[in-house]
Structures are given as C-alpha cells and as structure tokens.
Length: 293
Image 1: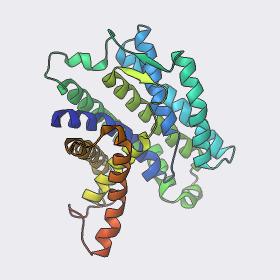
Image 2: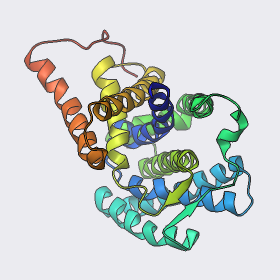
Image 3: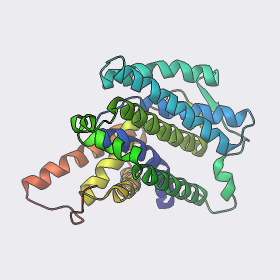
C-alpha cells in the first residue's frame, strides 16, 4: 500500500509542478486546470486506442493542454477577462471538447499498451514508480534549463514584479500567455499519466484536481519554507508523496472512501492553516530556512 501511495504521489507531482508555474511564479489562480487535466487524459487515451504509441500520445496531450492555456491567456491578456473567469470559461468549454474527442463520457484502455508497459515484469506499482521518477526528472531538468534562459528570467520577473518587468522592456502579457501554456501543457501531461495508470479517461476526471495539486505545493512549503527554485520543485514532489500517504492513512483508519474528496479538502485546509499557527506560536519551519529563488 505504501508503494502504491508513493507511485500515485510521483504521478500527481507532475500536476503540482504545473500548478506551481501559475500559482507561485505568476501568482494567479488558473481554473483551466480542471479542464486541461481531463483533456490530456482524453487526448492520450483516444490516441492510444487509435493505435498511436503511448509516448507520442502524451506529446499530443501536452500540445492540447498548451492550446487550452493559450485560449485562457488570450482571454485574460487581450480580452481583459479576469483570470479566474477566463479559466472557468475555458474549463466549461473543454467539457464539450473532451466529449467530441472521445465521442463518449469515458473511454477504456483495456488491452492497449500504456507507458508503464516499458517496465512490465516488475512488482506491482514499481512500473509506475520508475515511470514517474523518469518523467519528473526530465520535467524538472527542462524547467530549470528554461528558467535560467533570458526568456525564463523574464517569465520569473513578470511574476515577481510586473511593473518593474515592463519597465525593463519585458512583454508581460506574452509571459503570462507563455506561463499558462506551459502550465496547462504539464497539467495535461499529468492527466495522460493518471489516465494510463487508471486504465481509462473520463470527461469528469478533472473535478477536484486543483485540491490535489495545491496540497503538493502547500505541504512542501510548510515543511521546507523558502528554498531555491530547483529545491522548490523537489519540495512539490515530496509534498505530493506525503499527501498521498496522508490519504492512505485516512483510508487505513477505516473511513468511507466515498467521501475521499472532503478528506482531501480537510487535509489541505489544515496545511494552509499551519503557517499561521506556526507564526502564532513563533515556530520555525521543520527544515531550516533556505534561500529564496
């Protein structure tokens, strides 16, 4: 059971990293997540069922997610629609797009290859663990490489201080669009991985995924405090694994799993309140303060 929770934590950490780009770097909430996640699932599963390789199907899912982020970004920056409302509009519209792609509310991967089959023959859940580790390693390396380019620095500067970034000649609207595209592409990638683990895609598969992604961010921040950029991405992964272990603990207590979403919300609410409780009690972080990125 613990290996299962770790495997789930590694896969869902991809979602947490996608959310990190908008919630922490650009500092705005993007509700497109609950549409781009099942969109990635639908595109990947439909492609696999149609005979496309699992790896290529994941690439198609990323492109679909980036398209969703692009629409949200254009509504926000060019249409001057508030970012939350822009995300809601795109999320709602994607429900119909997903139905069009799958031509049904859900689609199974029964008897079709999945990305995890590259590690077939391993004990249960180890295939997911190894796949998750490889995907996360590649994703973090690519993101760190991007962040240390001039474009990446402009992206970070936009989130840190938009007015100052504009004064330096940075096109902040383009940075926001770019951030939304990359974020939702990564979120769609997470959707494709989760769908292949579950063995199906569902049109309602994105409900509540923001809570799971935010839990990864918050738990990592509560434990480690301020860290360098690369360390923050690692903290998201650790937070995601710990969140899945917490859920496993709740299930082991014998509570009805029908209400798993309210358990998830309670865990996240408690994690969100911990920094305030710590300040009130004048406590430090569990791990010493690090350097900000």
